[in-house]
Image (cartoon, rainbow, N blue to C red; front, side, top):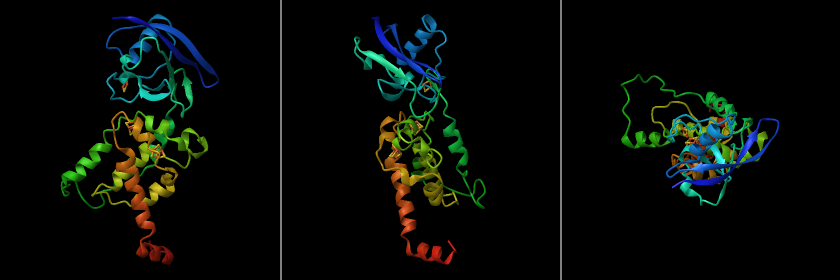
Length: 247
Ligand code: SF4
Ligand code: F3S
Ligand code: FES
């Protein structure tokens, strides 16, 4: 069964923009990205949108749909009633390039700043991991880098000025993943706290709520990382070592 749906799509660039009204055909089983593609094909050939896999795996098609950060390719039109107006806007935290496409280079800069896996003297094949450690890493590595968690975290969404000091949930999770890896030799606690702003996170869990991979970012990465940082800070041996300048 087809019907005509009312859409408001944000059109503009880094200078200015506005919501533009469209009426578009919707067919059974379609997702929001199908409708955006139909809009491009029939009414707005210059509408800019980033997408790739249409299967919830490339992380490209992040947008805000009726104000909720979501993947356009994984948002079924059946989520909405036929008479509902559906508003599609670019993710708010990052600067707009054009229409629904934003500049997410902040995230790649943060990724580059995290020191990579440090195996120390251990050579490939010399180390065996427990299954529990493998599984812990695997949860974090389901990340598709859609940056919806980064978009929704109030620390940078409402305070752009925090961006230089704060890596955001996706990259604090990456630091936690490395810290919990039994073969990684680096001490990631100061890196998380001092270089990437772990202390800014006040556990609102909005990041976890929007993650399309259902990664428990807050409970399994951020809170354990905070506990490790606190453990170090209040460890009397570390305190004495710091005073003596040897830790
Ligand atoms: Fe997206 Fe989840 Fe990865 Fe954040 S952690 S970038 S929400 S997949
Ligand atoms: Fe932000 Fe998630 Fe912490 S939304 S405040 S990183 S729990
Ligand atoms: Fe790849 Fe949506 S197009 S996640």
